[in-house]
Length: 489
Image 1 (cartoon, rainbow, N blue to C red):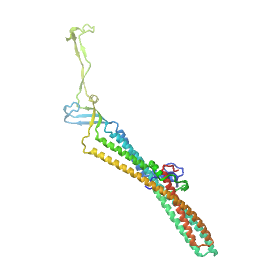
Image 2 (cartoon, rainbow, N blue to C red):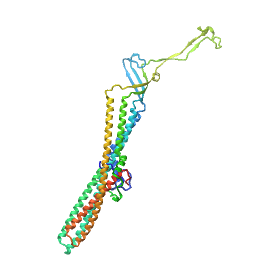
Image 3 (cartoon, one colour):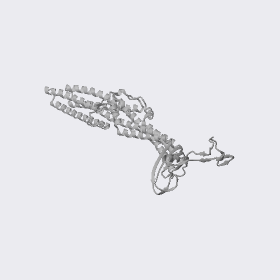
Image 4 (cartoon, one colour):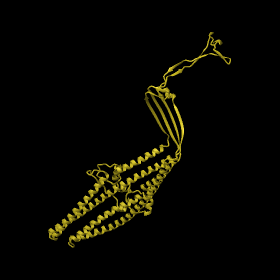
């Protein structure tokens, strides 16, 4: 975890502001660090896997939210039977082929379940937030890996330039020595020694170029770019004097606890485990549900129905005055005449539509489910959730402890790299002056080749050490800036 939080790290600190998209033009041959990181994040399978984990947690959260709503299910069935059987409509035994159909729907609404749904919603909401922070941490890990490889390439490019300079310097000295040997002012051995030094510097340049090629290949592999594609990086225009340490170790840590995604993820996981305990305890309480049903059916065995039309009274109207004669009555009731009432009727098939309309059946039920004994499953679930909560708390404490150690280490490294850079700067200045004097003395024959070569090699090593100290100081200072949530561009 030493440098794994450098998400935005060099995200801009080593960048030029052109090309803000995640995908980089494949025809570009010089990439900034921002381009490399954007491309890596857009194509990383690890990031995609973490993204799917976030989407899964979102689905779980949505499912928990909608569990508060009624569940409604419908059913439709159709079948045939032969032989003696029960008519599903009349419940009479019949011996014939019967085609029957049933249509129904059921709705269930949880009214109370020990706050289990409410707690589960909060649990999955915080779990989703933790998954998002885990994704951010994954991106940080990808970022620091790419940044490390990028800086390695930049460092090797600088070393190649340094080796080229050393080779050019020794080559110039060889050319001058050849002229002096030809003029008889120097011995032939001086020319041979310088020629060997030039060859040594050529070998050193080849080695540095090989190291650069390997570091470029490693960066390409991290970006999933084919090795055959033209590719190079752009050396950032930043100097150590552009960065500085302005916060104490404890101040950096206090800020880091507020901004680092692993800390936030650990906190969300603790909260999620708390709600998980409450949700598990909800299984120990009674559950109250409202259930509604509606059903209807049809059977081909239903008998035809007799349909009765509107009836009418029959009476004698001999006079044609519209008034019934008393003698047309068939009797008397309470002093009033009673006439004949006639109704017309006819037979009609009992079709499916009429059966579905007539056979509708509805129920509404309040159902109370009381847990009495369930083979210790509910209480075992509560105990497991309590243990997981304690584990989440321990993990959160470990994460905070690890972050403190990382901040302390990064701070010490930054201070040490600052001192190293300053010391190497003074060393290079001294080596350059010493080599300048040695070169003048060698050209006039005041020193031999061995002394000259030692001075030149010392200068080369000092410059290489200065380059290493330079990028190490910049990188570690920017890591501290990231811990503090500062803008690094």
